[in-house]
Image 1: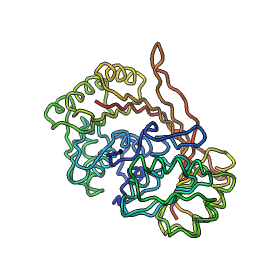
Image 2: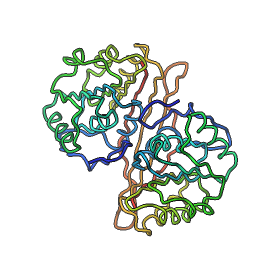
Image 3: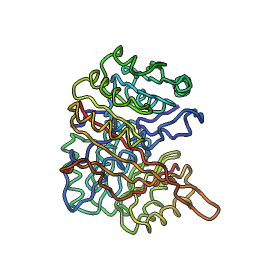
Image 4: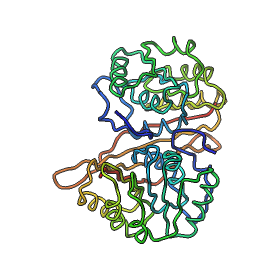
Length: 195
Length: 195
């Protein structure tokens, strides 16, 4: 279904529903890159939503790797499973749960994605820190100002290194009857750091 | 030197000089993704500058692939060679030439990057179209409005499909004495299309 080595699967290749958010192509490519993945890695995708990051991470870590995709919303879990089937991916465990109830049970991680969480992102980042192997990466996608502030504080407080905050604003072209216009998308902020 | 499978090498890993431009990490990751690379691919990097896209493309296409990096500036060619040595990469030909004098001689391409060119981008894109294999991708990084307009016209006129224009605006965090501020970078526009 996706025969290329590089990440960046176009959004329209994924099954989507109105109710479940998707991490769009460009911020998704950047999040995958900032996680610095390799074959055989153990990865968590916390708040997997449509499963677009799960799919890309699973392709990057390959058959010797494994992705644990967690979401508290049954509709997200169902949609992630549909997308994994669509892309022919089998190295993923999709878990319907509050991440806080599940993280402690997972094997140590080589990379963790956090996104789509509610007001508990700060606590989830704390729990993830305990599970990350040394020198491994956390990548947190943030929309809310409040979450950005809370996550920055907790990431600095936990002693992560190489803390990078990248705000990404994307505009995409659209044909009109008279030419080509650019349509703005909302800014996404990606916080990444090394344990 | 870069042990990961994913693209997105931090800028500070590269040798740099004041005089030669570099495609920065985030637009570079997106350009690599939009090229849809796989192992064994033949890739051109036209206007290679510091060689940061050359390095990332060479890592993605692997030992069975080959990258032809071309620049008309001897300082760019020298810097690209330095970066290839730094990253231990040997599957690249670095060519000091006006691209227009060289493209016809190269083997057919699976993907082409065009960037850092002068007023002749339009002609270069025309020449690249002839060298691209069917279903392969062109990715053009553009700064100037004039180039964007000219490239859009030529890409549409040549009959490329899946034409995508993505404007990327990145801000990066910087520590100040009292907190964390965001520093804006200039917008970069990425035109990508499938032959």
